[in-house]
Image (cartoon, rainbow, N blue to C red; front, side):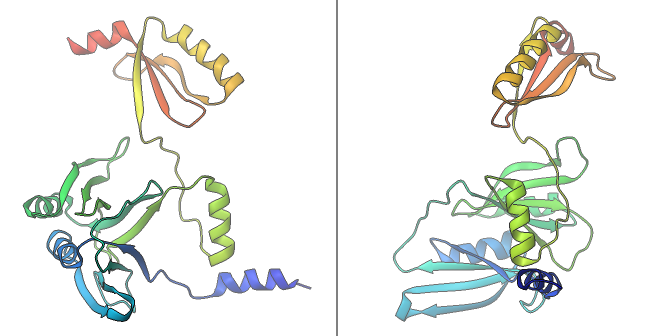
Length: 249
């Protein structure tokens, strides 16, 4: 017979939950509305002012709130600037033409492109990044037609497996996909990739981190490299310096 907690968790899986909106604060409500409608093609769904609580807010999205995810912008009277913090990453918008949306952003006086349209590292999906007047980031992703263009919210977590389990249990969410892609890396030239990799291997065994790619030539290029992540997950690529100079010729 199922225990009380098992029954609750099983019900949670069956409950018809859906994401309604993400709430965040902006310094100028009308400016942000103008930005999102002109740059991203969102619609102003509703707007309200609550003088008793000294705030106003507006809901924007790509369709009615009863079927679509929305952004709830909040303006607190007299506050024109906020520190976003390092936990929030970005929102994502799916579009059939990233270049066209990027051009709309560039023509605006309030938003800016921080990453030009182009394929993701190691893939073919075309993306770009835009920043709104308050500093919030939006990833523009080229995809086919979709009923929900506002497709992702990226947050940084301290323990990925713990967070996955939490949302599965607490909200009945499902893990849709997972990937391991160190976002930033540095390249270091070395006289001997093989010897350098041996030193890295010893250090990782003692202090953490791991070898990602054993030393050897890159297919089609022949430049010898090795790669690893340090104990904090930052990626480093070791490159044979003599081979690197040949690439520059």
